[in-house]
Image (cartoon, rainbow, N blue to C red):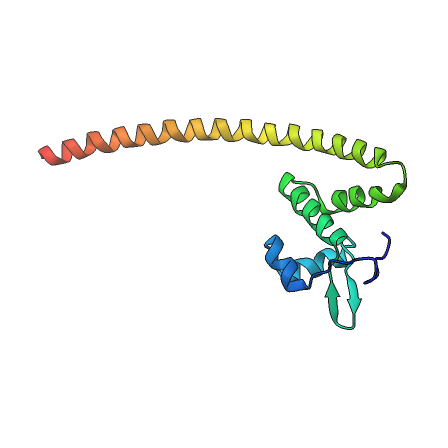
Length: 139
């Protein structure tokens, strides 16, 4: 990943600003940095996050929400700089996205079945409770 310098990154933000903007903790940002997903500019102990860092973090969080592994996300992000107008990156993203979409649909189908089963069980239990409550009230 190309390094950005303070001169090349007019809009930088500190770790607090990044955390507030994206709803993450400093620990999360440092973790993503340790996994080479983002590369803030270092000024002594301070980290300065560039527009590129913010864009990458946005993609990381979206990828996580979709269920991509951090390794998949790192590989996809690193394909950006290949110089092929992101053809490789887009192709790999589409392939991984299609896989995740199929997996998510399968999970949804399983959830729909579980919900329907639970609804039946709750209805049966509620009916039984009502009958027993009526019987108990008469006794």
